[in-house]
Length: 159
Length: 467
Image (cartoon, rainbow over all chains, first blue to last red; front, side, top):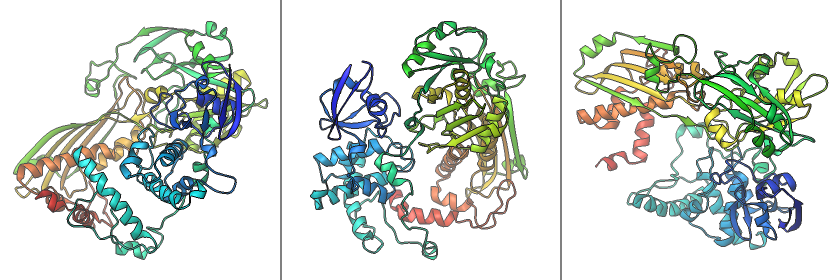
């Protein structure tokens, strides 16, 4: 089946078997390997992408359901010149160790900051509840998200 | 729950304060006395830290940027032209003799290019201590996670569909699941004549005399459960067997040189013909310390003459990759009226699962650390690792240290509680200090146990919590 969608502002399409998940379409048909397959059952959040403003586990969403949707993946965060504030702060804080959870974690954080630029620690924890990290213990991730939020409020041009 | 929310509210202020304090100069943050503080606590730098400027400095990871950009290439992000996908069929029984495996129907399935069974593996055994583990079980499957056959197909879905067409005839054998039952003489045997495959004894002084001289003797059994490492990246391999008879293997393996040796053994070819490529690993925690599916993927590539990729499903990860040893720990500890430990007798039974893996290291560390960081004149540790028909236990963060720590610290609390001694105080009375002898007679240097305990207790206001 033909699936047409907008990925990171670009029109993309692919002919995929009907059982193809959005994650598989992104990774194998569109070559966007940023989102990862961690558990395949929607527990770990490594496959998180934003679909029409909502962060979703792309391993649980059929590609066909995303037809016509606007999708943001980790590849859409940085510009040619600049890192996204989240990426900058994650790097500064050493918030990623093995890095496998990173793309999903950053996308969930981005979706939070898009809707709530000044989140409390509680709100950050809540927004990242669907993203598991086995290395860091989350502390640095939470600090990085809070600081990125502050940075984005101060420099709206960067967002 | 109420406490948690309160903690979180405090944390917001703390975070702000911590940030203000950190920039521009790393000023210490004064700990407010009037409210409970949890995390993150910024405290005055210790003198030792100031003497070594590198310690305490923020460092960024050299690979941090690509991680954040989503550009780090893990194995599943790598593809090759004409690459196949492999899936492994697992045993239907915890213990069974495989009478026959028929892959002919699977081979007729769409997209299937090659299949593999244990009989086709040149040397079907590996392991870091004992080579007791098969690549694909044949003729005996010893736990449900044992692979019995594998398929390489043009898509993962074709490979999964083909697994259902493989016919395996089993003759179920009696199985043993409880490590204490496995110790019994008449229990079903997993390998050979006994299930005990490794043991260790540590003796110091005279434990019976020490217990006889004690004012109080505490006895208790502690046990811990299986733990899976759950790396976010499952075990992953790509193999490409070229026309010159050399194989290139991209692997998320941790112990590389050992892995190459195991590959040379199982594939029965010199190491010089095996090119092992280490990729970025998406979490190891000890679970990627030995080969798993590498030889299977290599042989499927040899048969199909195409690159083959195999990614474990999360289910494979739980049943087939190694896990942490569950321990059953019997502690008998004699103390005087002041709570000083005079003797400690310990029996550890390690549930080893179906194969040895890293049990040798685990039983060693577990036994040495079992008496705890305490000065005890009379010690006896007896440890046994036993096979059971369950998931193989292996290396995991600490190699047995966390299990025994749970037991000895729980018993320290029992003793403190029974004798009405402050739990901190009883640890300070018994704890190691400079030049203390470990249970194996090693003189210990740079021991800061009591200082660490005292400082930690001050910082989280132990006394106030006790009040």
